[in-house]
Each structure stands twice: as C-alpha cells, then as structure tokens.
Image 1 (cartoon, rainbow, N blue to C red):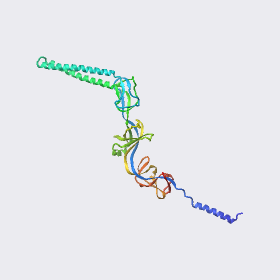
Image 2: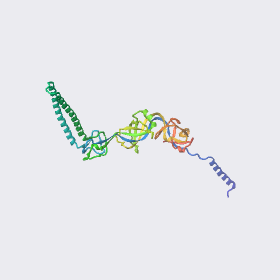
Image 3: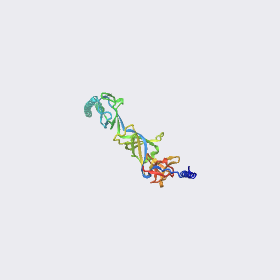
Image 4: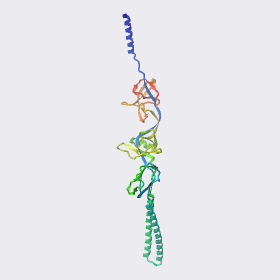
Length: 361
C-alpha cells in the first residue's frame, strides 16, 4: 500500500510539470521565403499587342489577251521572281496581226513617199503657172492624209506588238504563288477579270497591330524605325525582328486604339499571311531604373505593397509606387531602395515583423 505522503509528492510533481508546459509553449519555426534584390538597370519601355500578318504586296495575275493556255511554267506554292514566265497563251494570232500591221505600215510609207514627190512637183509647176492652185492643194492634202495614216499604222503596230508580248504572262512581283486557277488547254479572256494565280510577297512581310492611343505620343517622339518583335501565337520559341514603318493617321474612336505596321525580313518564312502574332514594340529604354520581380508585388485595398527582409531576417510590409511592369519585372518609383531584399515567394506564410528563413532562389 502506497504511503499517502509519497502519493502527494507524485501528484505535486505531475501538476508542476503540466503547469510549466502551459506557461512556456514551443515557438513555431520561421517561415521559409525566397527573396530577390532590388537593382537598378536599363529597362526597355515596351508595348505589347496582338497583330495579324499581311503580305507586303499582293498581285492577282490576269490574262490581258484572249486565247488558249498552251503552257503553265510553275507549280502551285512556288517562289517566283519578278519577270518570270508563268503562263504561255497561244501567240499565233497575235504574231499574224503583228506581221499584218508591219506590212500595212510599209505600204503606207511607200505611198507617203510618192505623195511627197507629187506635192513637190506640183509646187514647182505652180510657180511656172503650169498647174492650178487647186491641184497643188490636192497634192498637199494627199500627202497630209497619208502622213496621218502612217501614224495610225504605227499605233496599230505597237498594239499588235504589245498583244504578242502579253501572250506571255510574267510575274509582276516576286513572291509565293498560290493556287493555279487555270490549266493547260483552258480558254482565257481578258474581259473576264478572272485571275490566273495570286502572288503574295512574303519576304519582306508586314504585321498590322493596334496599340492604345495613350502610347501614341511616346511612339511619335521616338520616331520611325522602332524595334519590333513578333512571335506566332502558340509558339514562343521563335522570334522575328523588324522595324516600325507605318503609323495610321487617325485613332479609332470605338476602340481607342491606333493601327501600326511593322516590316520584317522574314527570310526564314516564320511569318505567314493571315496568321496571328504576339507583337512587342520597344518604344524607348529607361536608364538606371529601379526594378524588382513582378512576383514580389502584393495588390490589395491599401494599394501595391511588398515585403522587405530587414535586419535579423525580419520582414516589413512597405507600400510602393509601380511606374510600369512587364511579364517579369516591375519598375518602381518610390517605396524601397536599391539593394533591398524583397520576398518573391512565400508571402502568404509571413506577417509584419515576422522572422523568416531566407532560401536561395
């Protein structure tokens, strides 16, 4: 049987231990956070938009004379050069018309020479009063009429030569050919207006994109030749670089945007007419700007804030002024200084004045 005094001592010891535990609870470990340092660097001021690709030039090649297509000298989708023969229309009727026009011109030249000799003879005889003035006028009129006929023959000859030349259809621009809309043996007519093939010039190529009208003053101040990059939507691995070449002359009052165009060399054929691209226009470069990662920013009812890690690894919440931001960086105006350590991951686990454990990013 346990002695009452010993039982009382055991109970007193247990009660004292429980009281000590309640009086001094174990402190939780500091939260782990990832930090980055606020630095000063040159930051490009960029405008981002979604644009559409369009060819630099488009040519709808059509027949300018009637006839049967004898030959198609290229394949659909080929790269063609300016002046390259694309179609050959039966040229025999036009060669015959050219020969006829040449013959008519030669005949009328002979008649004109004879009429000029008659005029000269009549004028000599009129001085000796061997012929009347009426006969002289008739000779002169005949020579003038034949001279007019010569001019008409020359025009007809030039037309026949042009028709013969047009029987050979050539590419008006360099570019990529589309679908061939006529085949060998088809009859084509100049009056139909139906194109034989469509050619798009894609190197260089244009990208058309809208930007907010508020960006217009900065763009105008920077001048022409601004750097522009374009990436196909859905493929961020390839980037085409070009320059700004066009600013529209009016702002769209419905959307509050203005249309710009940029030219790209497109030697690798990365950009294709009709495709959508992500456009980044570099307006200027801000020198020695204070920047932090965008992930450091906390936006709430009190505005934009961030956690700064101070002495003894304690964090303090500070309000900041954000001048502009991109996908990864934010340019700050006020709130912190160069060299401050800001929390970029783990903000939800810390509070004002809490001690943290800094992890290497």
